[in-house]
Length: 327
Image (tube, rainbow, N blue to C red; front, side):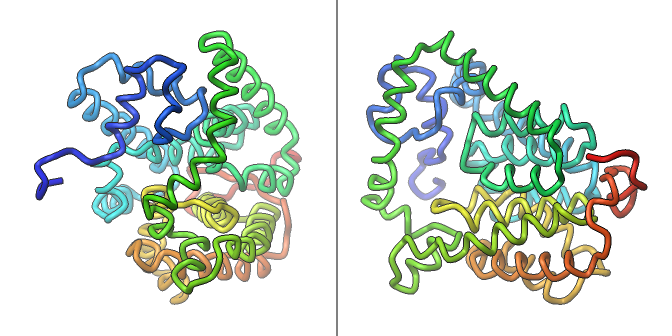
């Protein structure tokens, strides 16, 4: 951006979408988010571009800081903003700060209602970021949170239909399958940091990412089925989502990058955990780091003897507290 003297971040898309008629927001295939995302974007569209970008990044940074401070040290949070992913998201204006904050808030609370509300809000903004949520909630047997998530999600969908109508939803469903082909035509698929990108780098077909799905599901199940700190739960949730997704770019890893910085600062973690975290923080080696971190989180989860015997406490040093009631 400095070289070309032009702002090239994704926020020009988010802000620009608020300025066009609803029936045109999916015309150019640069915006693949569901219409419910407009509920988040619309208030920022009331400002001029530069003030809007500053406000967007500032609110996103405050949101992830407030969510992460419940289970991460301030030093880890500060260093997280200085990583490639952290700086890129702040300058590029991606939506991932808000997504990470919502998921961190959901996993950092022991209240089913708050967990369900946060997960549902994230799901209607960027659904592919919540691929791990159903497995996590089932593993926890957190039926109340699932009920809240379903109710709130349906409520937000109805609000969007009331505000925007059904035609824009039909247009989104029609254009969404074409978005992936558009990304391939632009070479964006080559920048994927998940298993899809790893497969493509070795000359394999994109569908080879499906081989990572079982590892993602197993990791998510094992970690959420047993005792684990909130930090580990978020890490498992994030890597599982990437392993199950055919589309992940570096800015989608911002929340995971924060967690990996915290893992690197934890002297009690294993060398292989440090290695995986360092790879993810580097972004360029993230694909390998995600696989290694998933394996290590699964191995550590298997060593914990008592499944579902503790509730998570963001105020306890290890994120654990004695069981109070069944989840």
